Image (cartoon, rainbow, N blue to C red; front, side, top):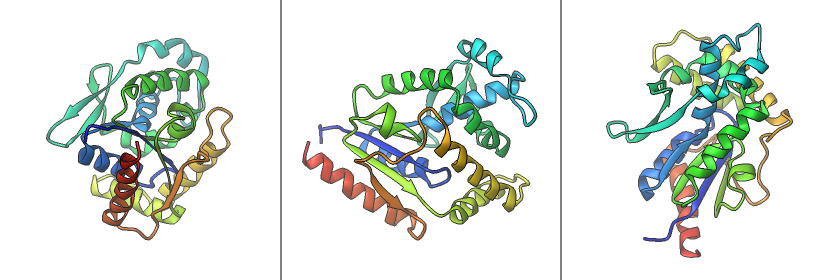
Length: 231
């Protein structure tokens, strides 16, 4: 099928946005963009340079040096998706750690950071045939996306998923810390002044608390195929 659309997937943290976005991109032969990985990479950049920690946040220094953070995705054929590179270093594993998760929402609040990354994201999707997930894809980055999905799930379900991911990677974390992080990120994402997490008026909400990955994929794939028949 030659017709291509733009698919915007927004939602709360740990709702499986990246998982479904990767599945769709692979099925459709589309480009997959994990916008959250970009904010995580800027968070790691800030941590490595001492701009942010649990105890401090030097926003002026981050803004002044933001031009020194070069981001790009490089496709890994073994994994079947693109990995995040920060200044030519593969940081895909580092940016997924809880230390980064605990700080990324603060980084995402900075208007200068959002302006930089939204510009990159818009450029990536200008030719359609892209699946992008994040917090403001359907409301800011791709307002005219043909299909907008808003993912949600209970905090307990999301925390359990994220906790299991950490354990599988061998990381020593407590469920309560992961749960608290989920709630905190929700609070910051919803209440931030610039590009808060909200459901686009034309987005289709998917609550996957009780759905398997296979069920979720089929539901959303059906929505994609319906859109493709009508473009």
